[in-house]
Amino acid sequence: MDTPAVWHAIVKQRDPAALDALLADDVVFHSSVVHPPQVGRAITAKYLAGALRVLNHAEFHYVREIVGPRDAVLEFTARIDDVLVNGVDLIRWGDDGRITEFKVMVRLLKAVHALRHKMGELLQREP
Figure 1 (cartoon, rainbow, N blue to C red):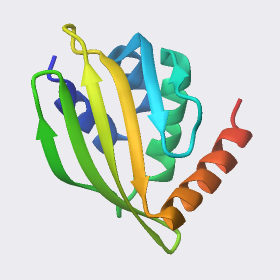
Figure 2 (figure 1 turned 135 degrees about the vertical axis):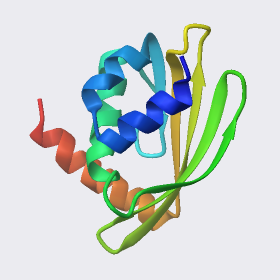
Figure 3 (figure 1 turned 180 degrees about the vertical axis):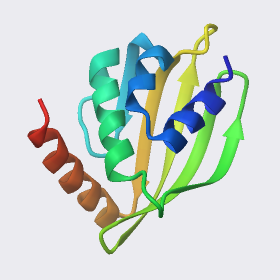
């Protein structure tokens, strides 16, 4: 499996249902706005599906990509309301291509606050 290509397809198609097949059972999710790290496919899929809704719109773009044999760094830009968001997705996968670790790091502080607020609103509305 070409893990980065599958991830890009999920983002492009805005298809959170496809996350289940891409995430390992014991995947660990790290975020600038969630502490402690979240462990497991269900919770990681929930956060990534939320991010697909909050960040993945017309102004979301991956602007740089560094890919190794088992990991990738994907730099992105997006906008939340009037706040420019710059961040990176650090993705690690196993021999089967399924993601074992997904880390999202966002800068600047104003962007972290905007993302936390929007994700909080979204996750409180959904079961």
